[in-house]
Length: 99
Image (cartoon, rainbow, N blue to C red):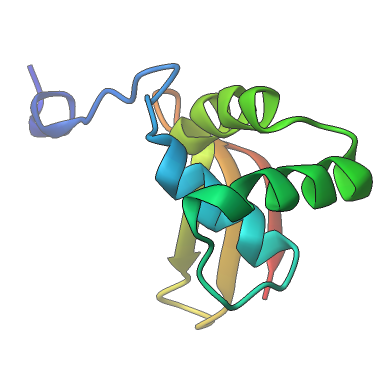
């Protein structure tokens, strides 16, 4: 067996997340910089739903399924920075954009 196969990292199809991290991501997506107290989370969830029509539980499931596909990399030749989603187990890009 080659070294590449021995060193290959197998990425799961879903990565479990904690709701606190998802709430912080929701706030970032809404350009909210202040921290939310427990009694204010409902306001954040309502505002997020108004903007994206996705509730926090649905969003958490989406995040858990997208995380295994996320990447950011820099081309060693061009220096171009790429961000997007890739099938890491098969070494192919799904979607990528230069930033």
